[in-house]
Length: 394
Image (tube, rainbow, N blue to C red; front, side):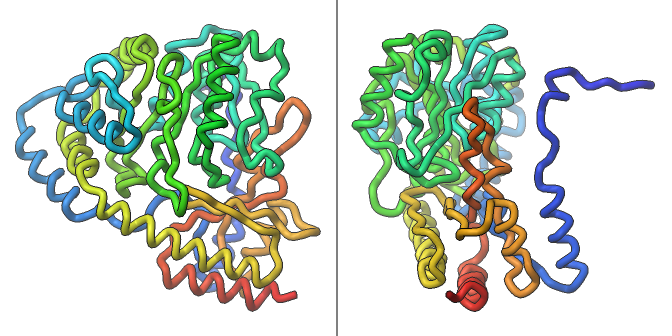
């Protein structure tokens, strides 16, 4: 039988990491296990008390059947309470929130609720891939705006041509930003909101994945500036080391949330109740988040000290567990990633060009950067710093 994939599926790029994967396999065949800074998936376990709450809820929900499509009341009310405490934002759990199966499915599916084939969607690059793929599957056309060092990695909405702005239906933003670690200021949000209102563009803010992984300045929510015309996406994956649980929520403009709920009820059957109970437990505790934040900060400082000692370009990361490191002179993102895979160094990083899209100006904003994800243990991070200092001394 001749199986032909859809044109939309064919339009997606192939897996980009094959070349680096081959080098990694060669190292392993030589008995060398690289230190992996490439994958942004927390290696620390989900806290004990969250796992215990999950186990208890599995038994409690043994015969409850399908969950609510849009979230059980207690979970939504807990999310509302958390948003109120964290941002002083008041939300109605009945009309301004919906549970999600984590951020990925929500980000991917959201364009289906808003755009028609041929509509433009403004997307940052580098950016979370479902922003792009969800747009493409909904029949939309991505318009990529580069996140550049000269703009502190803030999406420069003023650089978007007016003819593009007039056609766009959605603008995606992501702060705290993956992979640059940038945080958006209140002033930036105020300007963005005014710009989006001018062109009647919905702001879709994927802000909740890293909102509590910060180092000095506490990130704000765009909902502190404006709710109308805005939808925000939240996940417990990184805040609580719950990537495998698949639980989060969206919040914002009641009319946008209404359309999201209508779409969602036609796609999935809701987040399992025992997973929502785990989420409730996670949101009611801040101590474990503070501990995790302190550990990421320690890892970050160890690496940045090593980078500085060997004379690499200055790197700042205000939030997230990523370091968006500019490569030294004479390298691009791929050649530097390969350099770090030499046997005496053996560090896996992600070439920035592989997680960035080329813009209309033929710019790939990731070409001069590599991404370090602070996932290895503290001991391995220290070892990585030692290897960098030994192999890149001026």
